[in-house]
Image (cartoon, rainbow, N blue to C red; front, side, top):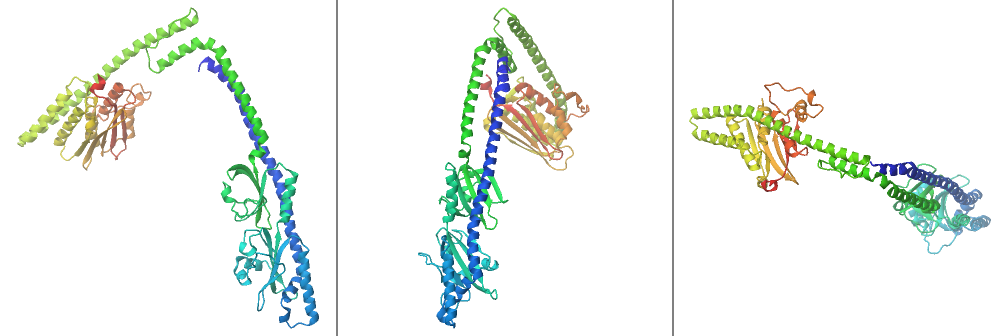
Length: 607
């Protein structure tokens, strides 16, 4: 990092970033505070609304309780068909008066929209005792009401009122926005079931509650809804979502884990604060949805100004850096750029020597150091090449006499057995191996390397009958590609001499090749005894420059396991670089897979 960047970074790190972090923290804290305060305020509002709603229901409960206590509902049931009853005139007058009291009791409540009674023990005729006439509404017959799920629930309440909201049971309440009370009527003398009272009230009182809330805060952008425990919107003050399920409008599943909860979330695709208050005694919850953009409008405007100020500060810092720091750091920056070229491998990079001060001495020192490094690099490269070639010659000198001796011995055995054709074939293959081995070229075509490998494997099959089988699959388009001589044969030799050592089954060697972008991948796979982690480590750390190289325990002089692999690995990496070489995967008893990765090019590319 140059001096100019350091100064600029210090300005950013010590001034801009702290301001930015402080601003972000302030925004988050303020956002959270807004959400918390709104949640608290909304809790008070929903509790007040809930109290008002409960008051409406309790008021109607009181009205019907009075009617039950006075016996007007029971009397209305008895008086529904006075001609069919064996009653005295005075008794009949009393019943008619009670029925009139029943009607007047309900008429006095302006919110009541419709009311009727079911006579449980009714005889002939209808079991429905209508008190108010309502157009376009057909009362559910008592026989069907008995089959309705609400019937058993009403009976189980033993006279306590059951409230149902609009859209919950339209077959019973109709399509109007009315809340319906259903309760069992018992006889006063013996508490036997006499009938079922159904009273419907209009939503006027509910509208008044929400209208008063709107008048107190005209700028409030909040949607209020009444939702039942199944997620059905039974009442929407704005009449937009009546009768719909709330779930499609919410990202999270609608549920109430406590009496009150409030959280931020998506509602109808808009970020909002959603508050839910459980009415407890009833199977409904009050839900308020307030747009987050409305709540955070002022803070959002402040955030925009903050971003503008931060942008101006950053631009001012950049301008200061360009105008004043470039004159000081320019010369140093040139030297640093040339140093980075050297890091990338350009050892011929030299700095133009300018000026007459200490910077000139720095430039000359850099150039002199690069000249010395260049000389040392070429010297080490020559010595390393000589060392690698010497090791290869030593390896070949160790392998060839032993291989020739064993091959000639096998030819002699075949000659004694008068196997002239096999003798001829082995001699030809041995001659081909020697011809390729003594070539002066370091790189040969892949086709010659494969031919050399095939001859070697056929000779070994003569020597070790039924020990192994092999398969070579090299695409024709790869045959003219170049690779280092004697690359594949040491890898296969490792499989035969060490991988198949002591096995009691037929060994298999498979050699495959494929091209991948600018690389050639040659794979040698066997089903031999595999290698231990120590053997793999000895090959991996074969480079003397590796810090763990001297920690390895060398193999005994009579054991050459891994020697051919190390030689091939060193030659490939020295010739092609660290991107290429051998990649070995092996486990004891699981065989070995060796992948040889080399660059893809032919004679024409090399020239």
